[in-house]
Length: 183
Length: 152
Image 1 (tube, chains in turn blue, purple):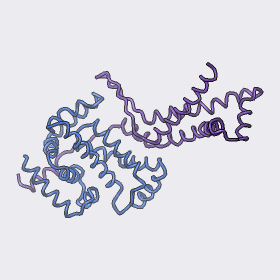
Image 2: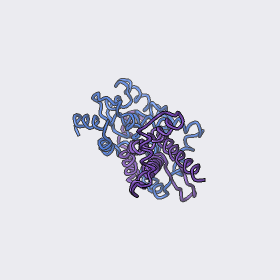
Image 3: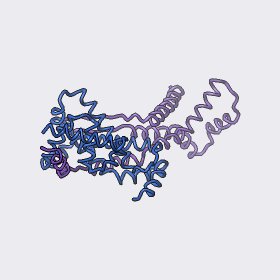
């Protein structure tokens, strides 16, 4: 879908649920993947993704098309929701290792937990990076996840986090340095 | 590990993917029906609300409402057809009942955990739905109290 078509669909989505659902169908998988790669918890991902799309639906009338695609806005909401979750959990759990260890047990469907755990077993490098990434400040977590987990360009990351390109480059550079020292 | 080498490792690393068809469909339905329950609810409580407002104006504030008196006479006419006799309670009590059920379903979420044998009930804070819910309950209570007061 080109930017003009997307712009028309967004305008229609402001008054028509059906058009918003079309946007949802286009972006659901990307957003789900992004949140999952940041939390590594399927049940939590479902909650955050639901919250993301419900917030997008409630606030779509405020969305103004400024050359940044709609997906950037969704990534920003999903990122904020994920960070908010981490902040809330930090208050309850002293250690993030503890969080990672027990987060799977909260899932409602045991089959889904097994499937997710099996899938994650094949990504040990990724889990190691993720575990260390969670120890960094959210501003670094977000840009590193977008750059290396989602393969976004500097320009796209800047649109998502609402910062200029140079700030993103500097956050990435410092974040990578901090992460590298943990290995 | 050098910085470039580390960046290279991050770029080439295999990333896990996940999805849930059940969640995708559930959320899609929620978005498709969002606000519909509230809008239908408003339509369903309007007639009983107007009726109760006239009752209040006439019997509490003692205002003269000849048109409403005619409607009252027509409603209580014993020669009315069965259709009218069924339609009136259906309109005054059935519609707020439907509005109540629809809006209750829109804000309540039930999740049964078989392993823990737990039933988790979540209430979503959708204020429009909650308002319609409260109005529906108030209307139903008014008619129920009237029925009890008249018959017992």
